[in-house]
Length: 396
Image 1 (cartoon, rainbow, N blue to C red):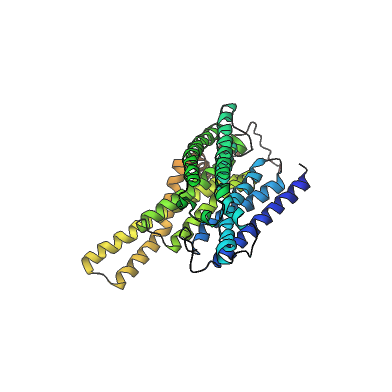
Image 2 (image 1 turned 90 degrees about the horizontal axis):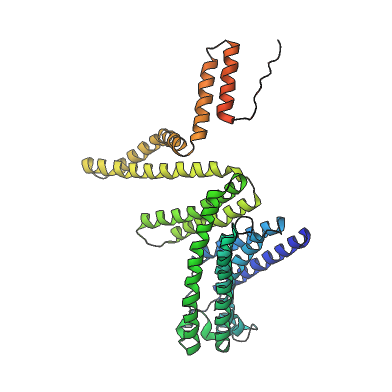
């Protein structure tokens, strides 16, 4: 595919996905008060979980427009489309068949399409993990897994689609499994077989990604660092928010989780486009520092409040004192944590900085030019490890 044609197609698909998302929101907001039993009322908080799929599509457009030969971009667009399409089709069918019957065409078709299209999105997501970052398998040994994913996705989606075609209509809108007909029961059995296969395949694909990371060098390793970071950040945020709130759900926590999930498509997009690729080490470093710092300050705050309250009782002065104490601890604690993380996880960077600091200290007292030349050569060798080193001194 030519670069210009690929870019046009990518932008067209992105615009189509965006239009579908906007239409979905508009139709969802127009849901009537009385809904079919299988349809739940629409809540705005749900959009927080839907936006990441739109971001997947957006990153896919950027990748496909700039690197049309890399299938990852097109697969990102497919992920966004096939995860958002069932949401749009559900509200489209609801409006066409229930809210305002006959006002929109193909309402029954839209209801039928919601039952199987999501399987395609999951299959494509597994393939993305398997083929990342260059669109090729890491080794031939993973080829059977790729074929299993493709076959399972196609067979499951086609079987469900064929089985439920005669059932198309309002009974397939929402939680269609409640229809409990012979055909819907058969479709559920097919999904109960095909879906676990995709889950196992996803775990295997993650294993292949980790093995690829272990063997990677240079640029590819930086790309995979972005993906590992983007995948682990939402998981860490979710676990932290769940523990902090006792596994309760609020709009704020849904927003925090959604922002965390956005890290995955953004990180993978950065990795494929190679934009600021080598800044990932700094980002990981800062994330570790502020994660540990936030935890330490939070523990210190609650310990201080609990300790003072047990002696002097609860008061606004106790809270103010705890806040001031935590604020005073911020910079010293940050420096100590930064130094510890540099020593533990970024040893070469720490050693290089220490070497340069020691050399700078010697420059203040040492005036022997030959000795300084040898010291400088040692510093350059320790920090940069060049293949060749020479020093030219301008004649005064």
